[in-house]
Amino acid sequence: MEKFDAIIIGTGQAGPSMAARCAAEGLKTAIIEKNKFGGTCVNDGCTPTKTMVASAKAAHMARRGDEFGVKINGEISVDMKKVKERKDAIVHQSNSGVEKWLKNTKNLTVFEGHARFKNNNTIEVDGQELQADKIYINVGGRARVPEGYEGVDVLTNTSIVDLDFVPEHLLVVGGSYIGLEFGQMFRRFGSEVTIIETADRLVKREDKDVSQGILDILKNEGINVELNASCISGKMENGKIVVDVDCSSGDRKVEGSHLLLAVGRVPNTDDLGLENTDIKVDSRGFIQTNDNLKTSVEGVWALGDCNGQGAFTHTAYNDFEIAAANLFDNDPRKTSDRIPCYGLYIDPALGRIGMTEDQVRASGKKALITTRTMKRISRAKEKGEAQGFMKILVDAESKKILGASILGIEGDEIIHSLLDIMYADAPYTVISRAVHIHPTVSELIPTALHDLKPLV
View 1 (tube, rainbow, N blue to C red):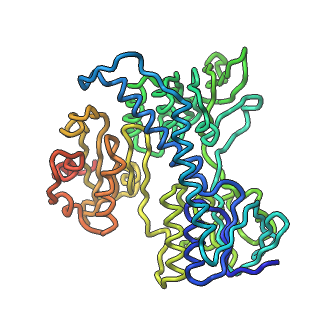
View 2 (tube, rainbow, N blue to C red):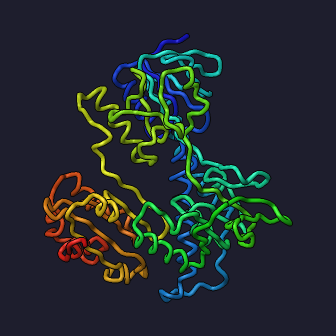
View 3 (tube, rainbow, N blue to C red):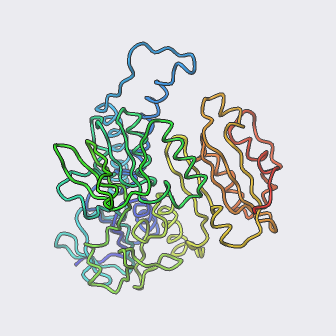
């Protein structure tokens, strides 16, 4: 058995930074990785998908060239092998960078293998036992594959990024973030795409007007959408994949060449040996933590996707910041301090912060609301990107921003001007009185805030 001061399991967004900080503080530190360095974001999530989204955007704009007076001779086609090569190169640069960083960090030992708990403070890695008083679990998650697809070679977010061809007809089960991003992406690559969703609208966690705006964007690009699907399952028939979308009638089926399952994610905690510890998990396998990311066992923390408190790269990194601040900086940071924020990377993107309109209504707060269509923004029209709208909600009494949705060109970027005002705990007037540069997309935010009306 080898004794360490700190052990980190997993090299996702929180793990490497936590390991480097522990090592820099003089702790004898170990970090364990069983697969690819960098975790989901670098290998299967943000980096590969946003790289491929960029390729899809290039193809989309090439086809729209005539709108801008640009003549392109010949048919626009996509070379998926080159798309994959570009994606692979960028992913390799990222994950190899994480690996080199960790392996060259003083006071840090890297173990490559599968980690399992033997007890509360002992980890076994391929037969070798490691022990520490401080253990940080950063094992991430993976795509959920439900029953009902036996005999079908399904794709997940991990396997679909390795395709080097354009599927003839991609079926996407799941009308939320992952499903919509890949659906639009492969439509732009040249696939016929059908998105199948059990709810009555896409991305049900969003307000109805946002869901409708997303649906309009996707339908404008020729994507088929099946809502209110029930009894979903898949099977092979005559060399094609057939997905049932309504078992009650028996005649509603969708046929395609390939199938992507995008129906949620599960934490990688099922083969971690947690049954040998006193670490508590919930019914879905997420490790239960308090506001400081401590588990039910003293000296063990859970960071990132496996704790169910964010499931985003930015929240995982913030988990590291919170854990490090409490351990080393005498800075009592906590997860409840952060404001919900995330993006949906269809094109144009959705930027979301704080409360939705539905949540504000449910809270009973007296609120103000303003909405503006992107068609009111000169820069959006000039760039030929006038789809979508923005919506901002404000507390009528405190004048503080409660939340916002920006579905439109650069929505994932410009939303931060509102988010920063929220973190500053300042009234909306700070930004409504600001002078923004013209012509920009952001300049409509102060204008929109001058037209707040009671939420009724």
